[in-house]
Image 1 (cartoon, rainbow, N blue to C red):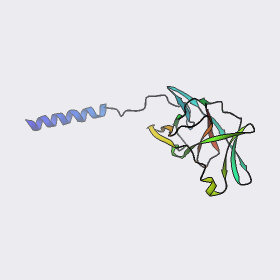
Image 2 (image 1 turned 135 degrees about the vertical axis):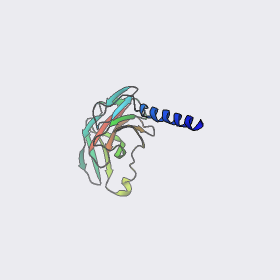
Image 3 (image 1 turned 30 degrees about the vertical axis):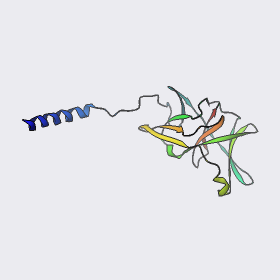
Image 4 (image 1 turned 120 degrees about the vertical axis):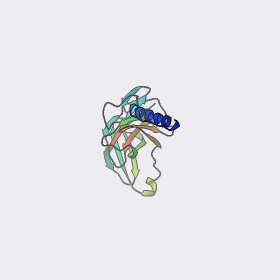
Length: 163
């Protein structure tokens, strides 16, 4: 009798298993792929997607974006992004503070590798939420100013302002 009871329980478990769905992300989804969106509660705000101009200087290379300020703004000192990927690799994204000079925003990297090592991106936490959907968070507070989330080795920038 106990063997039949065990078999019946196992059969019920086996039949119930396909009915259970894997829990998926139920929050807002970015409307366009490969663009990071700032997450404000349930609202998504697209970052300013631009191609930076590379400017070779005496002992450094600067990446320059036109305009003194991004139209995309967040009050969050530890910004949170959602991105649905097709081509971008979330683990290659880096967050840098930009300097405003002469009506443009820029970041300059020294050509000397020892000096270049001093410029470090803001630490990020990357969590996969669903197929091709990622949550990216600054893992440290940032001060007010202009910032860019950029794929390493690319002139592509996703700019925003912390106020």
